[in-house]
Length: 338
Length: 247
Image (cartoon, each protein chain N blue to C red):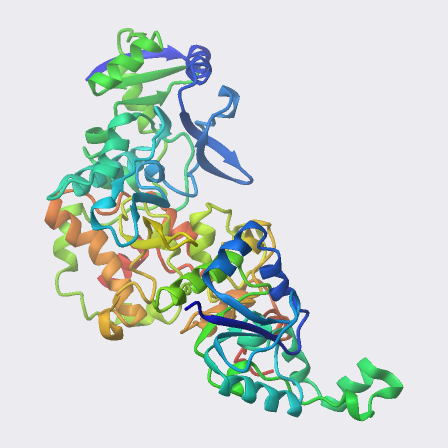
């Protein structure tokens, strides 16, 4: 990994030039009192000094709703896949979200490759940044380890007047040279390491990823699930804001003529009551407690057991989004430990 | 053969039917797909029987119950259309008070005249069997179109059974609870694209609730925002969502 640096002023100039070149550039912007990823129209909008965005950047690769194919009704051979576009560059991804993208990359490449996701993913260069603001419930530092570097093309680290740049991939090298970033002066990597450690986790998971998977073993019937379920709305907020969730529903929408249609997929979530409803009106996760358990097992056990990667990256969004205030994985694990 | 479609209204503002009249270009697609045989708001004409009947409005008089039962007998599929029909809607607020007081308040000196007679408000399914529901105040035009298409293709129409929070998240709205406001989104049925919260106004559950709303949790959340029992009841009763809380 190469270490480079660029002044903040030059970085903004680079972003402005990128926008002017008519490429689609996405970055973190202010949204009311919160933050969100959005298409940049001018470089001043970019806000890298942010707490956390409402939704994670996965929305550019797995859109909230996307058309997978179009067809003529009654003509089986008429279907044609459609592919949406993704931004050329996404700027400002926190390490937790970067690790989550690495997990999605893995998941959508397994078995039958998901071309809709992978095509979009290949088109984008990802510029990460280490957080400069704390965020309630965040515990990403202790959870993500190396996964973030499997997805990032480069990472920025705020050094005051400059950004330190960790160049990770060829794409990252290309964009760093487009920025006219310079080779790091002596001692830059120490400076970067210090700056990274400046923002401490708000909470901490008492286990490593591997330990958590083992800890959850035999906790399926713990009384905590039922207890927490009493307060759960099954509203899906915790999973809909989650950067590592990738479940979707597929639906056909036919035109009023009934002659042609589109097959769309849209985000879905296992915390919703009817998510597990199958033919015959059978629901294999009928109770809110079963769903709560499933979410934590999926984040803390199934994913790590299957892929060896973090199923939860500790971004803190679920805890923030939960109106009932019961979603924090750290709180839940603490209760299970009692 | 195109299915014969009819619209009828009971106690309501007829705003949901207006949504159909306002479909503009798409109305041509609708009439190409179905045969509109009775729809007082936009055309004259009657028919003895219907394949699909849309009922707007709540049922507030004994004679309306008879009229509704007669329509049901002549309809293959009957759809409750809009909040007044699906839940009783705002008309049900009167059920919380003494009927005579309500009548005096509205009709003043004329309150006891026979043509102003009224009974406790009922949703359509409290009087006749309802096959499908199109919720909302007003209904969502796209949802109407998708139900019409589904029925024309012989499919069972799917309406959302998840809460408004889902649509709010998908639109990446700031949660109103984070802005110090209250909202029934966590228990309210979606399908409206979270139009009220998207405009910074708390959801009042005009589509009723999801199938198993956690009302206790809703009380707890609202009480934590310092709402009194009265205020909580008020929050729930705009669209006849039974708050299931005692004073």
